[in-house]
Image: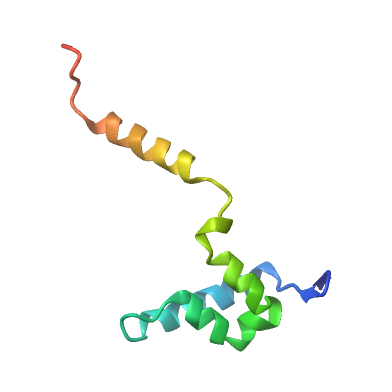
Length: 87
């Protein structure tokens, strides 16, 4: 399948690529990062140009879910705190 000029992997293919990339990362020397492995992986580059991989790892390109994650973490933390309102 194609989207624009970038071929797309099926969900199963994408899952297999991500799993094998992650497994390779686990076997690498400390200091190696997922971005480096993804850029070097021919299967990843066959479905994503290097620029798209770079964008995926750029924190400035994230979609802004940080506030939601922080709110959830605070709510979870508060749910396990002992009550301080005299109950």
